[in-house]
Length: 166
Length: 359
Image (cartoon, rainbow over all chains, first blue to last red; front, top):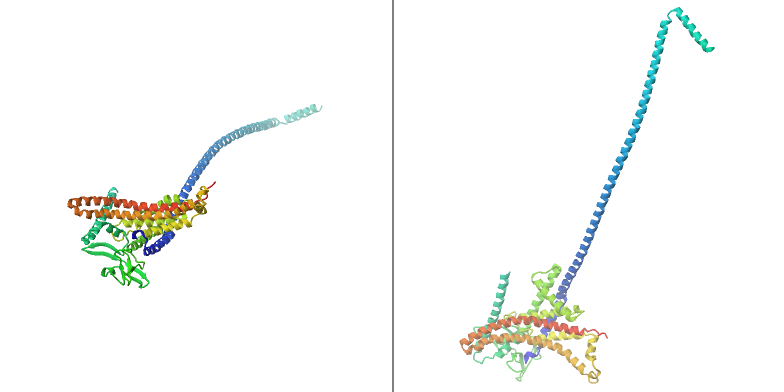
């Protein structure tokens, strides 16, 4: 039966057509498609891995940031505390210094006052002495206005000197 | 969205009913034109599933409407002859050639010799199957190259629409059929196997259409499946490993089974040929059976005319229902046969790539 016997003409055309089809599709058709789809698969895989990596990296960075922030906060606190301490110390020192200074000033002032007082006393004494001498001079001048008196005086003074000499 | 699917479903169903009706109308014309002689269903079906020198479309008002196809023949006495097949319509014998009505070369072009004998010339005419084959091949190349070009143009980004569908289809066959069946070095064979799959699938699908660009019984022609099977046979045996040949000629069986009478080797060698032979027959028989059943169901309408109008109407309804069912089944078979052909080819290649067993 002719249905079951291959026909030579059709065989020729089939070989030719199918050969061309296979040549074109197996060279330029399917490999391109399969390659592209596989490339896409690879790309998606890579992207996923990269995303995962980026996420862990981000987590790490985040954790690092947190740590740095903590550190900074601690440092800050410490600095604040130190500053406070220093401040207190400075103030204390200043206070002490001021007190000492004040004491010294007071002491100096006292000494000066004492000196001034002494000076004043001395001045007063001197003036008193001068005044006394002046008064005495005036008194003596008044008394010695007469000749007799002068001679009496000189005699008395000579006596006195003689007494002291003998 | 749901309405859209409903519409598509209805369109598909209508298409199948129309498919049946077109075939029925086709059949009716043939029947009415040959009313006088007892109408032979068997001949009618065989004529439709075999190759022809013209592409018969329909018969209108007792006039046959068909596409004439080029006849290309060579014989020692007449040399090369190229003419359109409608020359045989005008005169039954043209340039000493005629289409044999009966005998060994029934339906083929023969050369009439002077002594009254007829001889078969070398015949490379573009027949109905040839033209179908060429149309389907062009369609296949266009479809696949469009898909491939889309990747070249737009890179490997995700695809939508037809290209996305083709990608899914191709990768499914590649990853689910070829990869597991061939094994490790499947990449070498996957382009060919994919080509075979889509070639067979598209030809099967086009065969289920009733009208011109489709309807050719390409994969239901033994020549086509013969070529496909031969190529598979060549690939399997060329890519056969040492272990493959060893398992054929010196398999691991008790010695008395392979020497002095090489019983198992003979069976294995026969097996080498039965594998592609089965491939050839399976595809051919399935497709020709599908076409025959569809035609048979349609002819049911015309066979039952003689049983009275009531019976005829009833049988027509049954015929249309069954035809729609068979039409849907043919769609499944179209995919299934392409799938099986590809899978078995892949399995045979995989078996030929066998590695030595570890001991």
